[in-house]
Length: 300
Image (tube, rainbow, N blue to C red; front, top):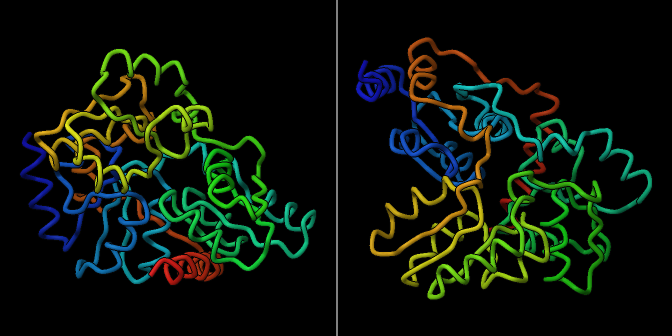
């Protein structure tokens, strides 16, 4: 079966737009109408005229799209595509932290579940985390679930106290990068610049030339002739499409299993049958939407 033709046919018939995260398999990214990071996808989805959104990513991304576009149908081809990082911060943990630190705002990474967002004060992305934290008047800030991103913000804002919740939360894929990886890359690619995601640990960040979000990488990693990219290897596909004259290197083991679950056959079935709709309870969506929109307002 020619899945590509059938997917395009069903998408047109059902007034659907396909969105794919930068970590998705290349064939999924190539089928998408819009590619980007998690928040870019949700924001752009809100602006599209189509009534159905098919989100190719992990579940919290589809939830965010539904929260920002409650009037639209949001489908996810693999509802079992979860996020270990998002699962590390539960609503109960947030509530407990607020009791232990009364009066402190909680900045929650957009890589979190809807029920957790609803308990927090404002969201952030890896690109705007420092801006969001700096915008808050309080000197002490609760921040979760990624402790490496929290520590990155702390280094950018030495006059504030950033308290990571949980203390050792993090993305398993980014936790696997080591300083040795950076050292090997420097020997193998002496002319390359090395950039890592702020979800990498502090030692890796300090060993690299630059630290940046996936969105930053896509926008800025065409300015040199050669790069080593320390994040999920799916990022190389949009980079190579955007900068065909630039050479990119990744670590082959840098794979998020959940990001690789969606196949063309899954996307085909989702569009054909309208399966796996994403639902967020109204009382959760209402509170989570406020938390997300606070971030969007600060970032304008």
